[in-house]
Amino acid sequence: MRTFSLFTILLLCLGILFVDILAFFWLHSITSLLESNILRTSIHVLYWVFTVGLIVSILTIKITLDDINPLRKQLLISRFYGLAVSSFIPKLIFVIIVSIFYFSNYFFSDNESILLIALVGLFSGFLPFFIILYGVFKAVYRFKVYHQIIKHSLLPQSFHGLKVIQISDLHLGSFNYKFKKLNEAIIKINQLKPDIIVMTGDLVNNYAWELRGWARVFRKLQAKKGKYAIFGNHDYGDYSEWESNSAKEKNFEDIKQFFKNIDFKLLLNQSETIKNTSEEIAIIGVENWGKPPFKQYGDLDLAIQNVKDIQFKILLSHDPSHWTQEIIDKTDIALTLSGHTHGMQAAFQYKNLQWSPIKYKFKHWAGLYRHNKQYLYVNRGLGWLGFPARIGMRPEITAIELQTKD
Image 1 (cartoon, rainbow, N blue to C red):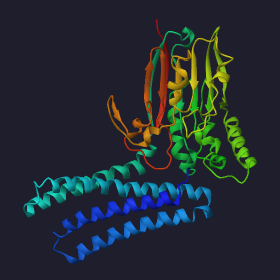
Image 2 (image 1 turned 90 degrees about the vertical axis):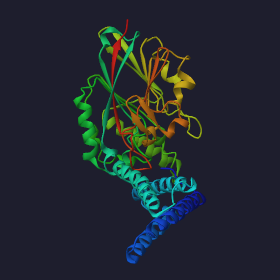
Image 3 (image 1 turned 60 degrees about the horizontal axis):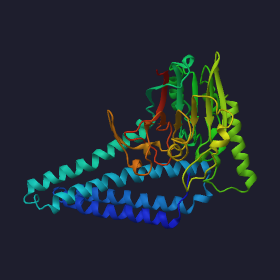
Image 4 (image 1 turned 135 degrees about the vertical axis):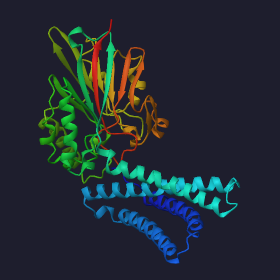
């Protein structure tokens, strides 16, 4: 998990304080309607106790961060991140809504109008608060299977109906060893009876010790033709400070060993062929490839060199921006499977309509995309990082059925 400078944390705290002051200004105008002085004073005191407590806690964690156990550090950062968001966003919405009504000069002409504004303002604040709470405590573990059928003329006939299950961005450190929670996803995957299972990066947040105890969970995964994996940007340990290069290298090797322990073939700029009678397809895996500041470990030319003659190719590449930079119109790779974006863990989705702020950073951020005869699927992630919630963006298991096309 990335660390932020004390200056950045101070700016965050000032932002929280500024919004809280504005929110309290409007809250005070609402509580002034209360007849009970005790109730009014209690609301005001509780409001500022929470605000001051949150800011002091954030600063304390930042100042003492180096002395905290890494696991406890991750959990504390995530929890206070969630607490800050669940406090900041509802108050910001509350301030905006009430300010719009006020500066329109349409209301506030009598007590009835003031009461109406109070109710609308409070509702506008409480609704997102409860939505965020649902995202933190419930939706984050509501694993959803997204079914896709992809038809392609280059797919050999004997592979018609091939089932490929994709999972991505598990970030196991965030699960805090809640094995039973993730076991529900394992059961869902096995019920789909996959031919191939692929993991497309970010198994951990940073450290190999996050993997303790998880092998017995992942060994339950069953696939008829093979299980494959690649590394994502978080799997290299680049976001942590290490005592030495050898310590970082050992962390890297331990993560690689974990994949062997759970019977996944780790493809680091490598490829594999899957045969069915006399026909075959290729599975290609590149190391992480991303735009700066993400490091580029991926080498597509190296990964593909042994399977150039195979017609139907599936590429595992963690960052979806790789698809537009090196794949479409430059290779004959039929299907690319990516992750990385998490769909920002927050989105609005209704039937075929979906929107998330992440779209302004990534052109391809969730679901299936097509360019001529080349496809990209971006998995929304199975775990979470930073903000410990999912709002309108449930954790995903992707079930792809490949079909031949005349």
